[in-house]
Length: 157
Length: 198
Image: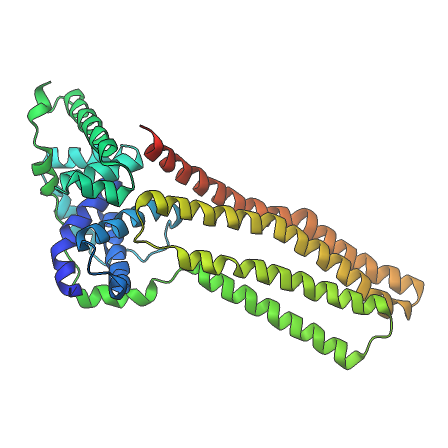
């Protein structure tokens, strides 16, 4: 599989994952770029028998987890600030709220719900995170409940 | 609940971001180097160079006393042990596979951080002690040719330096690194606990 195609197909998905994790547009963009740099470096080692999606999501989620150890280690995204703001300003308030609420969850839950909302099969999420499918199902159910509650408390209808 | 019918999936998909052209992305690859590797290589290089210098001193000055030789051996050994333990991190860093699942990745990260923690305290202490004893022994020969006053002066200065390093530099260095590491370890453990929780 060609890097160009992967990059094109997965960019928005990986960006959303990072955005759900941090709720910080610029940081999420940096993290997504980091992920694709790792993908580019590791691609020759990718074994064809595995699913490329699962493989990329493993890299992306592990990179999210590692943000703890690399504050300010990566050059800032070379994107004009006003462009980033403009992107955010045009967005529906409900979308903003969803990302805000997700980023307030515990780290593991952020990853699990982001993958679920990206329509990834629960069996696959289980492989990416390293938990049983049953466990993932329960967690997703609870996280969705928590998110609904947050929306309710916020008075958003 | 009123919001049970909120379509989270649809909202989720509403977020988009500009994509950097591939060529610009790949330009960043070179900037993306782990500082850990660089640190290890630099420390190893410094230690090797110093050891070579000490060996050179031994050969060119041909010390007579046993204590001098023992001092030199101890000093080099201190640096060798430190360098060796520092390089123990290499395989661990290499083994850091980003394509493991999250649970495995967290376990590997924790192992790495705990190893770093051990190196930074135990090995640093050992290094300091061996280095101090080594230098102290080495100095016996040159100071034996001095007058008592100069010998006391020479030992005094050296002792002062070691006291300063031991009681000020070393704890400060350890504390700085440990605060950062402990913080990371507790955060990683926290995430691990989230995964283990039913």
